[in-house]
Length: 319
Image (cartoon, rainbow, N blue to C red):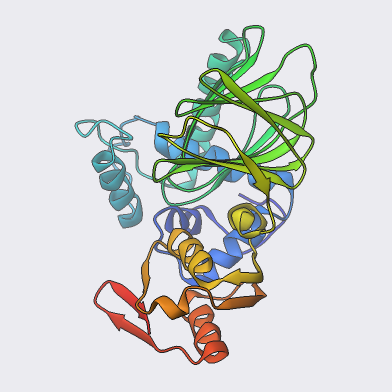
């Protein structure tokens, strides 16, 4: 690999996918990914090859420990069959795999009329171009399937994703998430389904949200939060930018309640932060976090409001 020459190589990408990279290495990889579209494509192809390949290793090639661990983790998560051996990784084998698997993917897409997409994330976000040129950024622990072969651009979503939809009035873009339908022509918006709630936030354009026999239109700056058991649809203004942290790589706090910020920190860093005093829930936070580590963010919060941060086993308590 030599896309805009950096110190990022295939071994470092493996560490990144395993969540074993240091904070500096993660920043290095993410900066490289965002440098040019070709790097983003290489990373997506690299990740897909690892997840989809079922090739057996050459007889005398040396296994890398990182890939052994990745293989085991993928097997445990059901991404590959446990009984099938994982390929070893050398630069020669990597080249063969990229050609063979990319060729197989291309053949599959051609035979499907380039209309089908299935992507899933676990510990990292993923930016994916859809068959119509629309872009989707999938948050961690999310899954998307799309079929654009019919009269609509049909998408099924589990988890969270941000969409930038290419306009096409003759072929609506329709997302199914839980028992909610989100219909658009061309716009950008965020859809999140977590904890028995579905939240839709519109950045540009108009989005039509439907449930059962009801529907409501959302415009720029509006959102809807629907609990699974809700029967009525009601929209509100969206005054927060917290929702876009996973694709903007910024946590923007503007009079943000500490309780809201903690929810995002738990998602982003896969931790369990708890606020022990009700009086702390409403404390306002006014700053933007970009490249800070979790302990740095917590230190800023603690100094801002004289809060005590206590690390207790796998929990972090704010007192």
